[in-house]
Amino acid sequence: MELTSSFGLTFFYDYATPSKVVLWLASIFSGIILCVLVYTSTAILSSLLFKGYGKLSSAEKIEWNNRGFSTFHALFVSSASFYLLILSDVFNVNSHGDVVINRSSTLSDAVLGISIGYFLTDLAMILWNFPALGGLEYVLGYCWP
Image 1 (cartoon, one colour):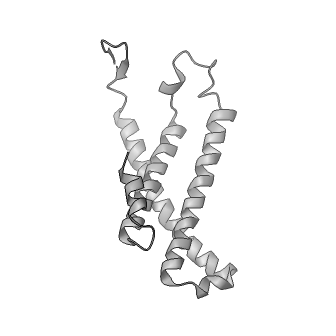
Image 2: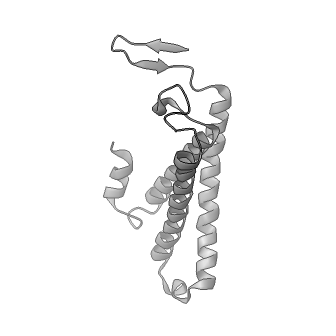
């Protein structure tokens, strides 16, 4: 259902349908689980592939592993964005009648949820290991708009 304000802005208050809420929650939890898996895999692979990894301190290993799932997230989101913007027609200006900013797909909603899971996991890691994994500027960067 659509609601128009006196300023001419259109609001969609039934955008969060039950199926989308389930998709978002599943995607967020999937993002958290993926971060834990990549964090653990980074530690295992780094200890097997890089002999210098064993010489790192505990704080340096945490930072290294954290950068592993950060890099994985960057590659994942870049690939999904490339597909959604270049290869698919979801955000093609000429393919649909509605405004581009109001468009979404199941894939774009899932990628958004996975990214939210990543950001929550990264924030939890920063707070859990504070200040070793970034100081006050990292926390403020997440919490300050």
